[in-house]
Amino acid sequence: MLQFVEQFIKRVFQDLFKRKRHVKIGLYGPPNGGKTTLANRICMDWIGEEMGKASPIEHETREVQIKEQINIKSGRRELSFNLIDTPGIATKIDYEMFMKKGLSNKEAKKRAKEATKGVIDAIKWLDEVDVVIVVLDATKDPYSQVNITIIGNLAARNIPVLLIGNKVDLRKADIKKVQAAFPQYDVIGISAKQGTNIDHLYEALFVVTK
Image (cartoon, rainbow, N blue to C red; front, side, top):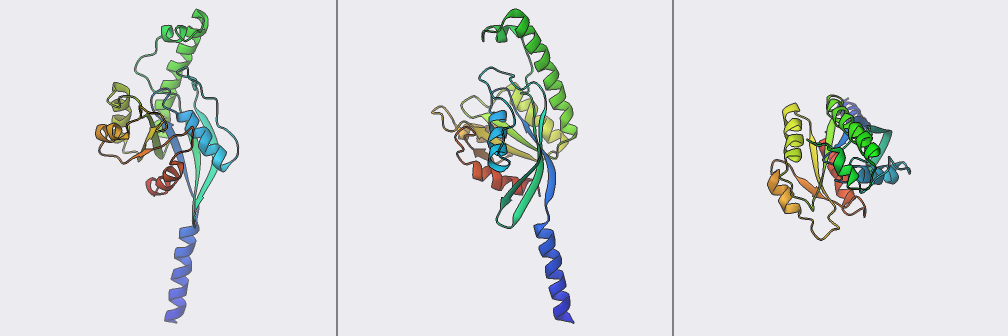
């Protein structure tokens, strides 16, 4: 009888261990940190298609984009999630900065308006996500008003955070600066473009979504 009970308990725990977890994971960060590039990397790795278009011009992503039912596996573990790529968070959006990138006055004003709405929508989505991956450009100073605002909002909402220092393939990248700026979080240095350390990110997702 005791052996039967032990086997039953073992099967229950095995079923729990194998059971899929389905969560909503949001990609957040300042413009041009590499959120969409990372989203594309994750989607290509696991479902074979890209999320959206990345661009060197800021605020290329101006609407929230969602890919559903992404399943990642590591050994006997499996995680199922919806990936939400949000517009870059900015405290100020000036149409003139788009004109400097070569857009016409009309195009620049339209883009600025759409980008502003995108920021508002991204903030609203914080009520929907279970976990946030914050993507920072590791070549830039992490002590910015935008970064501090993002991290502060997540801490206030008690949302689990995975902090990414992106673009480690570039010479100016400095992960230690990102770690020093936000010591309350473990920082994973990756190159979303090159795929560097992307496996470390996947492993970390199993931990942060527990």
